[in-house]
Structure formats: C-alpha cells, structure tokens
Image (cartoon, rainbow, N blue to C red; front, side, top):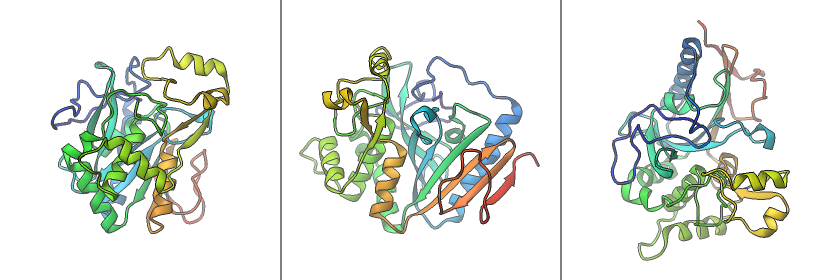
Length: 299
C-alpha cells in the first residue's frame, strides 16, 4: 500500500500527509504514467457518482490495494465513506500505517486518493456496500466523532493482526470495531476495544481464516516491522492459519446484519471499467456480463 496524497486536518493522533502511508509499500515510490492516473481518476469518478446518486449516508468501501492473490484474497483494505465528511462529500476515513513513525493513525482521504492506493495501476477493484438509513447515520456519527474514533485506535499496528486480540490492530479491524461502537455504543468505563470485540463475537462476526501455506512465511513475518505473530494462538500458527479482519469478513458481517444493504462492485482494466449492482463478484478479468454497466476510460 502507498503514501496517501490527500490532506488530513484533524486532532490528536490523526494523520498528516507527510506521515500517512499504507502498509506494504513503505519503501516503494509511487510510479504511474499520465494515462494511468487519468484512468484512475475517471474510475474514482464512477464510484463517487454512484455514491452521490444513492440515498445512503455511509458506505463500507474496500479496494484491491496490496496484491493478496496468492491467498485467494481480492480486497485488502477497507474504509468508511461518509456523505457529510468535512473533507468532501463521500471522502473516506480509515486507519493507515504511518511508515515514518512506525505507528497507526487515522486518515481522511478523497475517493480518488483511496482508489489510487493500489499495487496495480492497470487493473483494480472497488467494493461499495451502501448502509441503510438509520444504520448509516449511526456509523457516520461515530466515525466523525474524533473522540470515539480515536478511542478505538490501537497503539501498535500489525497488518496481520489477530481479530480477537487487542495487542495489535490492522486497518480493517479498526473499521469492524468502529461499526461495533456505532451500532452498540461502548461504555465509557471499560476498555473500548475489548468491548467492541466482545460485541462482534456475540453478533456472529467471523474473521477471515487466511491459509498461510508455509512455516517459512510465518517465520518471515517476524522480520517485517508491521507483521507480527505473537498475538496469534499457537494452534493457529501450527495449522498455518491466521484469523484476520479483512474487507470480505466485514462485508459478510454487515450483509448478514443488514440484509437491505446494497452492494456495488467496480473494476477497471485496459482502459475500460465495469459496474455491477448486486449479483456475484466481478470476474478477475473485469469482463462485463448482461446487466453490468461498461464504461470506456479512454474517451
């Protein structure tokens, strides 16, 4: 994941542009051609227009940022898009890893910057889950309340944080725990992340079981500053499985709790984009099926 371009003008431990970066690309520069940038901007515009046309107040959004295809995972990074965001309508609030400081921060970003945070400028996917009215308003209120949002920010980042531990936190776990506070406000006199995780467990939230596939990968994780294994149960590590919050697990939880939530999926590849409203996931080659909207990004 990469250094963000949009500004953040918030309080406390919220990020500044110089500090904000996503995990995984801390040492890699952003290199995109003018054509790739133009296509990504147009692609982000499609996502934004769909949000503007909706009646929703908040949406769970995810992008195919870091390439996790080897694990069978399309979406790596989730955030909350908010209609009344002070930065811009439908800007996003999310947890990022500040590479320069080696710590997690909250970061506000426009949709164009969010969509552009990808390993592959030639092909990408974005998922949008529109939250029903009352539920969306509760999420927007919790996300934009700095005190509530920061209260759930973990002290130490780990991209592969165990979903049922408060030792570390990844970007998606903050989203899941924020949803918990939005839909069941946390008590002020108890540890907030423990409360949020207890509520998620009680409501049937199921983190993604990632099959690591190799003990070498488990060992290698200990050599990367933003990967940790000490929060994972020994039995999981021996089984080469890590239970992690990922966009797919959060989305499944929200859809199970809110059957009326509408899902949109967007993809771009080779100068074209496809928009799908409902139905199965888009294919890996970003080809359109009957009922999909196909758009040229080179017109």
